[in-house]
Length: 195
Image (cartoon, rainbow, N blue to C red; front, side, top):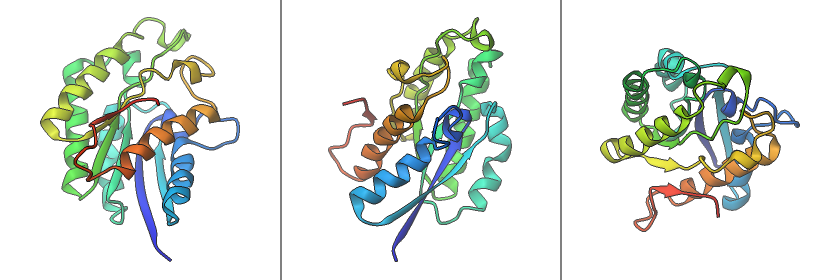
């Protein structure tokens, strides 16, 4: 049997918090890739609820070392950074170190911009930081040569102002799937948006 492994790094949005079926975009991504390629895919879900980019940076090297078979990785992190808010230069350096760690370990990163936040008491003051962090991700993609998965237009899929239900998981997976299936294609755009 041929199998493929993908590493999925992030917070509760990767973990799948609020998915009514207990699934996540990594689970849906594995399903979609397997259906489209007729090969077995597994997506290792390293999303942890409440985690910031600083938290992920602390653990990313060990995750990478224990997942040597993964050659592609998704990164969706920053929603919890907005609570502080994390200073932009700190967020940028965290993302830079995570990206370079992925590349140093032979993992091709695909980085998502942040989905919008609707009203939630935890995120009431700094919701606009999702746009600030997303713009920084776009700028960094030019310097560090990684693909971007655009999620800024995902507001309609939010079930509690922050998280996604299963329909959102399926949509995020579809966007990552399109990018993965087009890796290496010279005509592939760096940014894939909703169809």
